Image (tube, rainbow, N blue to C red; front, side, top):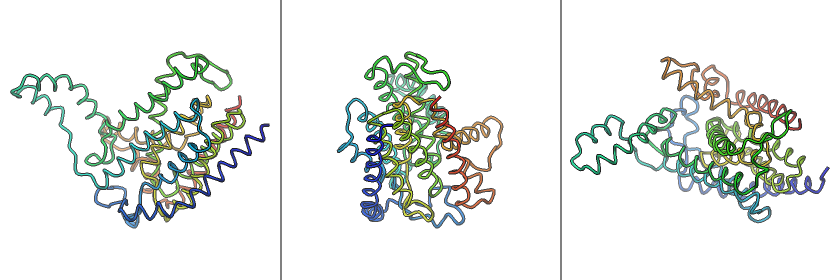
Length: 370
């Protein structure tokens, strides 16, 4: 047992928690001052009693993101290990921040349809413009196709733009693992089977999990306390695995995230003082994926991120069902909204999701050491 690493990790946890508590009032004041708050004019989830959440500050996830960045830069910076996770988290968090701000202060945005692009190709008087639109047809088709997964189609960053930037973040992580960490990282741990070398297939696998996990956490951030509490459980498990495996950089890093999340969740439980926003959910989702990859437990992500994956899968099922079958499977997606329509209270949903998530994470911990 590495008691020194355990003590160091707990020190990081306490420092992050205390530090986040100390500057949380400053963040809250800043968000209120500049009116970075939920609006009722475009947020379709603010109905009934949830109208009371209009005016609640968003981008509260900055409390975790900034605390983790500062502590890591000052006390846990390692060019071999922690700088890429910090970079991936920062890219995803900046993307989320831009989306949060545009959804509040941005103007209505429109996309040219596939049919309109075809018309321009036929009638535009300049040949080079027609050529440009012809070459861009696959991109136009892609952005129109993925738009069905967007919850705010007229404001903020469009889905295709998010996916492109998330792909870049995932590509950075894949480059780091494949080219910088050496050939031993071309293998992945498989439960009950040890290491399996998959070669360059590790690259698309990493990109997929970074993108999928970031969006999964984003979809789960819909009820007060839900994402924060579930992330505490998940990053605690990551910290434990990192400590047990002797990962001297990642045990303190994951413990730092846990400490900051404790402070965030204290202010986020109902009635929330502020809410995470895309800046927190996308940033922490990407960090969750890259940290699991870094400690060679990528295949544990369905366990460690269970409730988040469940939420995004219900969204995918709902969208495909409506498009292909013409009907809804759930009353509303993601899943927590379905239970709201069934009459469950917000507190009941959050607590039960925490318990279910915690159980599956414990199963993941059991699997992690086989």
